[in-house]
Image 1 (spheres, rainbow, N blue to C red):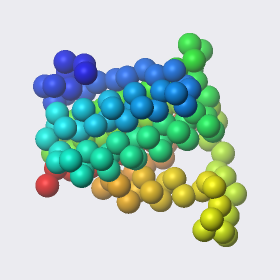
Image 2: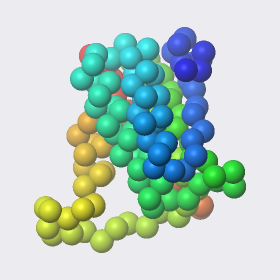
Image 3: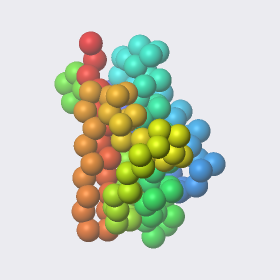
Length: 135
């Protein structure tokens, strides 16, 4: 874990854009959230939300020129925010009317696991910000 996270400031993980790296992303989120002082359930919620955001970045986004996506953790006051960034152009998926559809529920699940979820779309870059406050 980056030393900056241990001191509550910030840290970044650059991750190859491959599904085999999802465990690394979850572990980073769990360790960072625990170091910030969240309880086990809150850590699990954040790890689940980060996993979903990274999955979306891998499936629907694009890596940078080195084949990487970014997960950044930023602590501000009582809140911890994870920003998951890819370098693709965001396209909203068509909504499915079926609750059994394979995809299309990720944003709702991320929002339920966090206090705030924000989608930031720019030219050649998509960032999902997931924030949770300590109780």
